[in-house]
Amino acid sequence: MLDGIQIDPVAFTIPIGDGFPIYWYGILVTVGIAIGVWWGAREIAKRNQNVDEFFNGLILVIFSGYLFARLTYVTLEAFAGRGDQFETFLDLINIRSGGINILGGFIGAAFVGWLFIRWRGLNFWHYADVAGPAVLIAQAIGRWGNFINQELYGPPTTRPWGILIDAQHRLPQYSDLTQYPLETRFHPTFLYESIWLLLGFIVLVALNSRNRDKWRPGTLFGLFLIWWGAGRAVLEFFRPDQPTIGDSPITYSFLLAVALVLAGAWIIMRRNNRAPEVFGRRRRRPVKPKPRRSQ
Image 1 (spheres, rainbow, N blue to C red):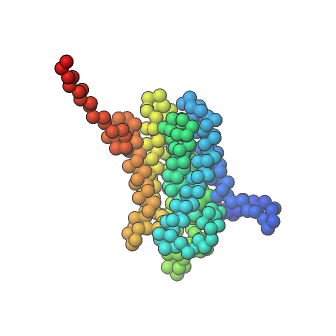
Image 2 (image 1 turned 90 degrees about the vertical axis):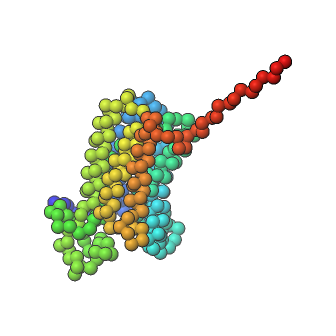
Image 3 (image 1 turned 135 degrees about the vertical axis):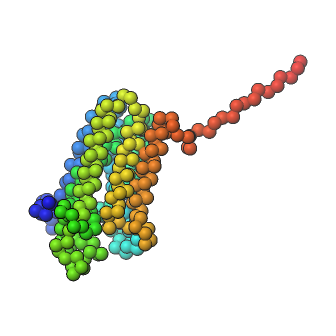
């Protein structure tokens, strides 16, 4: 189905020094972010929130997201015993060399965004509601960069929609061409995730349009966490590139995805007064009036 599409990962090269290549992956991620930001800015305005502050915090959130995504990837690779590939500090932070973990990046970006919003005295939940669908559409488009790079594929399959992977892009466990010849097809995990994310964006935008004035702020964000986390948890079983916990099939990203689902459910209940105040205020004990002395 996708075998006839062969695209050079390098879109063009800027004539600087020996040449500075611009990759399709970066272009597609940028386009995805731009569409997410466009929708987010329109939605923030509809919620009567400060659009200028939205853009002020955007650069900080995006930068911190990529930083945490790279650090999470490096940490998980070290846990898996593959940390020797990062010999220098530049190897640790070089995103262009490949390797980011979007779940870790999201958690880091959300924390930085929360700090920024508290500092500016804004309503966190309105901005969180906007961030959810924006993340979905940005990632749905960016996943096609993984396709061009021949990465983010799953285990071998006989399904007709399986994709071919060149020998130089094979994972170590599939590099033996006698066992896995060039005709071997693999699950297009990137496609599964892209479809799930795009569908989630459509569903959440539709629900938001109908319930913007009915739902309490934060409800949409909770639904986003459940949708994204549930899909990612399932897809982790089609990610042979992910570090696993010991010899088990459970990956670290699977645990992060499950945590997102639980967090989303808790946020929805908490924002709608259906969850206990785990981290809320302590109940004040009633103060007993002091008995008056008889005069």
